[in-house]
Image 1: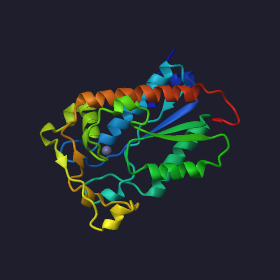
Image 2: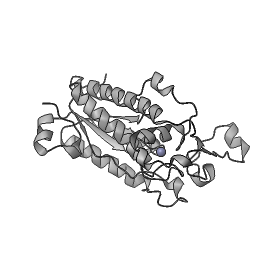
Image 3: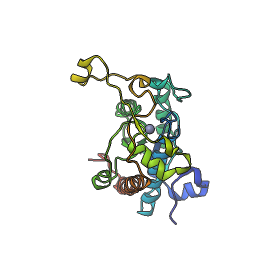
Image 4: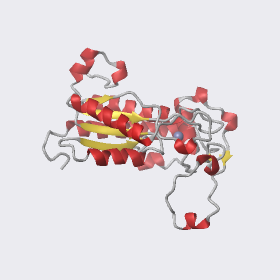
Length: 257
Ligand SMILES: [Zn+2]
């Protein structure tokens, strides 16, 4: 019997039958994405890849369980926008560690964080660092589109880090009912006036109401559901293959070496 691996959709007998050895932790976000896209954009995208990839992995002979998408994450730099849902960094770290503990308690020691929100990777990596001394545990981090092929990703014409062509295309594919198509446009991405910040590519947390005043940035006018479908289908296929290989790799004290 092939199980979906989607925990929310399984019975207790399904879970016992699956005997998973890989755990997937999808991490979304709920924050504004400009005038055209819904607050749930990141969560919809990451759920598509993580849930779809898990289903595919189990069809390929993996034993993968996918936890429910976490829909609130790190958005303190969004605080000027209404209801940008957020938690503090220590809360988020505790949440991730608790989910890792849950998996380990169930005998699952290979854990994949699938992240859909740009504010999170620094802290997910910090959690991975903290967990690095835990014997026998393997954690890794991928994003919504990490496992999409180069060819699929070549459809993008105008890249953006928030609510631009990529996200607009993906939501047009996943949830067209929620897109205000008459609001799809070019939204400004403002550079700091202090030129040395730009010259030396200094890292700082940008206040997003100054960086992208519309809560969306870049040129989304070339977005299409077709582009979103191309990239997400490729991402699901690639994520499925990745998870299946991770699951099928034999037990060893030196995994993954
Ligand atoms: Zn987003």
